[in-house]
Amino acid sequence: MVKYNLKRYIAIITILAVGFFILYVTLFNLPIKESVSYSITTISVFAFLFVSVAWKCKAFRGWLVPFPDISGKWKGYLESSYEGGSKRIPIELSIRQTFLHIQIKLSTKESKSNSIAAAFNIDDDRNIKQICYTYRNEPRAKFQERSPIHYGSVILNIDANDKMSGIYWTGRKTIGDISVSKCSK
Image (cartoon, rainbow, N blue to C red):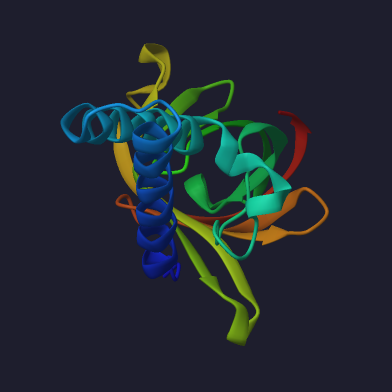
């Protein structure tokens, strides 16, 4: 699991709120009630900007943001035990990520899958940096007779060189390896 810096988040929000309150009371000479209201509004705007965009800044990496930005397009392949073989299937991953949410879509020529739940598994002490997710796969209609809709899970190891690799397994008792490289943001 990711160790979130909850105490740090609360301390930063509190310091900013008090700072803005003092600013509104002293510099703008606003009444206390209005200063509280403006401070809350200002902190809300800052929080929204941080959660949606600013968390990606390298200045926050490590001490405040404990996980990497893996959003973007990834291309590679998977090797599956499906139908008794170990054939290589080209894939494309599309990852949308904010500070609070991550959505992963995987596409092949025959099917698309969407993550249902996703989380980082980061443990610096054990040198582990992974994204783990559960998905629902929907093959195109013409392939559903031999490849029904199914669920599965993936664990991908995140490499520092814009590569990820790992394993997957499904509810239809298939397993495989996945390897992807980042193409774009």
